[in-house]
Image 1 (tube, helix red, strand yellow):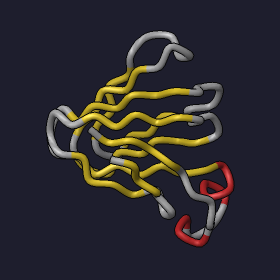
Image 2 (image 1 turned 135 degrees about the vertical axis):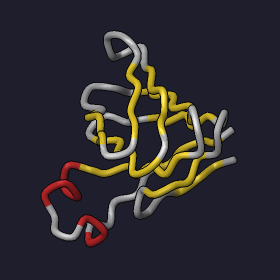
Image 3 (image 1 turned 30 degrees about the vertical axis):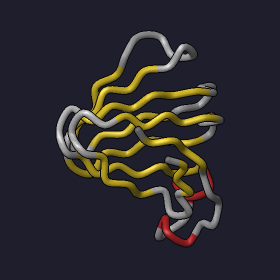
Image 4 (image 1 turned 180 degrees about the horizontal axis):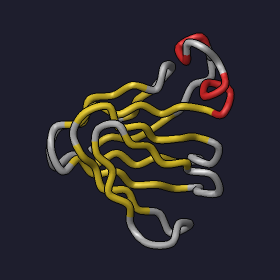
Amino acid sequence: MKVNLTHGAIDLAQGKLLSLDAAAGWSLQVSDGSVWVTSPDMPGDHFLHGGTSLKLDGSRRVVVEALQDSHIRLVTRRQRAATPARDATESFSACAA
């Protein structure tokens, strides 16, 4: 399934995967739940839970798996600087499985 995340928010059910291509310059924020994040461009795997985030700078391809039902948000540098974040208009393409 191809997902266009204009505002970057997505609900990811437990066990579901999200594959992010061209992820460099984005941050992954976890509002609720917990996720596992891996990329060949990042040292080690990352486990994030509600209220935490991870900058994906330098990461071209990232895989996210929901360890429990999770609400995540993909945010650009411009969105991180904007208040509120939803004012930014960049979009992101992702594949969810």
